[in-house]
Length: 377
Image 1 (cartoon, rainbow, N blue to C red):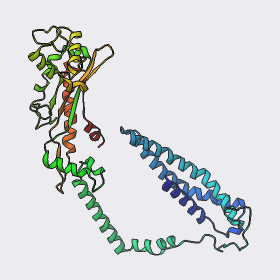
Image 2: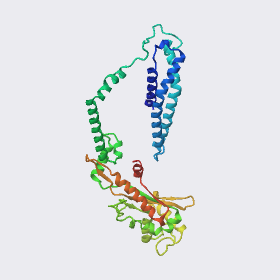
Image 3: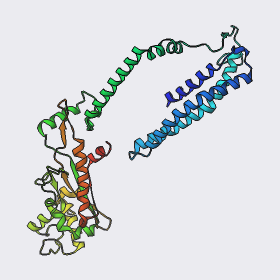
Image 4: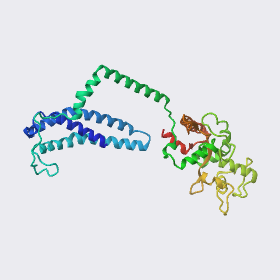
């Protein structure tokens, strides 16, 4: 923001100086005002177009779905508008007053007092600076000469080719590892995981809501592993549900327990022929007793305690099953292991489509902490 504001000020001051045709001491207040008018006529359009371009870009970016980017862009757009407003109004007014101060040979800070030294006032009015002389006398003639044209075209053709080559070979993948400083101890952990556990994937979970629907579809929920089989090699790239690390489902564990042990230790409710409680209230009681013992000690399904949510009336609000994707990484050109963004995005989208297709099990939604990173690409 500071750079944009200073740039506008430089453009206005330069145009103002170039409009001075006589000695500073020979200008009256009306002459300075007319010079400021001509300067703003030249510089005003320049700073307006550049400021408007920046304003529109940031204003469009403020509609981003990323809250941090949207907030920053909105803040930047407002600041750019205010910078233009202050440059066109406040700054333009104050440098007219400052020009009067210089004409009267008054000091910068103590503007009520005059200098004893004579005012350095060139006879021809505006005096061209070193940079301006360089571009007029040397840079522009060299650029417009035949060798200059050939060199310019060749250099920028090379830059264009290099840019196209880089764009074609640009990898869309990124990794959170790039956010750590080089030499961080965290890389020791990453290296160990890559060497000893290369197939370890990303964890995910699927949350099922509404206790009445969970009770109604209890049998289907206990057999989710059948729906998650054979998905390793294609989206959603879900690991085979053959172990506790790749598939953990409260309903599967509860049903297996009831089949083997009955409900004597977890509410002692009546079970139907399918080994499930016969009514919804008994089902809630069984789930609660299975996951958290009220008599002290560990409940049979204590490992599922963090996977269930009960309301104040002991009604099951929701539960979640946990699973794992296969390893969704790859090696870059330098041999470093990075996240495979394409496969991660495919996995996320396919998981959502899969869960949405389970119409009889709704409402349900999948989630993974990695989704936050994926959505940020």
